[in-house]
Image (cartoon, rainbow, N blue to C red; front, top):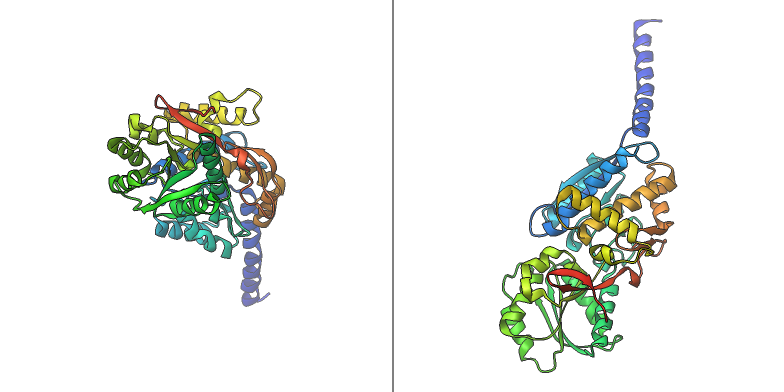
Length: 386
């Protein structure tokens, strides 16, 4: 064999060997899962517990042998609540890290910014945000694990009717979550027998809402206030209502389900009503409730490790990973399309937010009964009793 032939033969052998070795590594190395959470910034109450939960659960799964014999590798990005950063990180996770799936982001606005990007790149996205527009209209690769906005609105209205309330004021923040909730409250009002007398949108960073609440107070007939936002307005609404003597019931969205919000509002939060996942009242569930074991186990592990109360937002990260792990087991490995199909086939999966039943036409998988109506009593969350 002449020298040139030998070199060409060696080169061909190496070129054939390289893909084989790369394939072997891909089939035996850790399975990469991307995560985008608002760990810092104004939405940190959402993202920080989610990030802690994701790390805790991945460590637990890996310590127990991984999934199908392979470890998980969590690649976590802190978007600080910025849609621009969320887009940049999503591109990194898709193009550079080549993750199997992305969990998060924490907010609806961020999720809507990366929804199309994930769909175009056939990347599984399991959002931890709440807005129903995340999965409606349906996108083949996009799912979410937070309960539906429409279900939250229905439960709020029906609880109001139990109290004889028919005429309300709706307040919402000018972000993705606030806009989505506002639409649901408007769309469902007539069918639920409610009349919206005041409908106000405020800046998401507002630190005083006295002017808007004074307008509500001056409107004859208002029987209750519904506020749909995340921080900081949730506690501000309650405090400002108390300060100006607006003595009507306050209902909040499911975004209120972190006890820190009630703590910030202090005594003004007493009696506030809001729909939430049962994780915040897990201790009150009957022993035979299907979620009892899951929510109490997660609560105990999280609070022992981080010395802080659980919230539904950390629970969403728990559920997102739970869905991926269940789908990986069903798919037999990290083939993205097989995993996506497996998610659509998940039935009866008990999570912190409820019992998930996904399908090709339902990428949330939760029904109205995923919500429990909660109230604030002596600074703590407790199940609302009629």
